[in-house]
Length: 73
Image 1 (cartoon, rainbow, N blue to C red):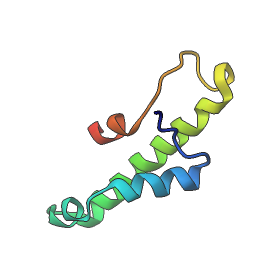
Image 2: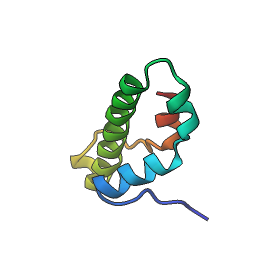
Image 3: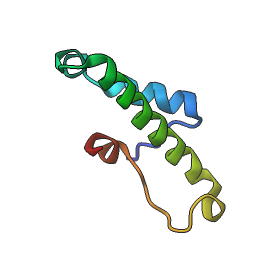
Image 4: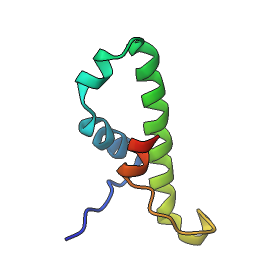
């Protein structure tokens, strides 16, 4: 069984935000800044995943940037 990333920036962003826990976001000391940072990382993650469909034109080395890498960021 495989889990393919969603196609397109919008669907990828929605998929990433659906996996996030609101408790972590709301319990931090600066939730407004944390949400902005989280949005930036989500957007970057979506762009990287969308770029993979272009193959060698998109990247020199193929790398599966999945949710685990996003979570580490």
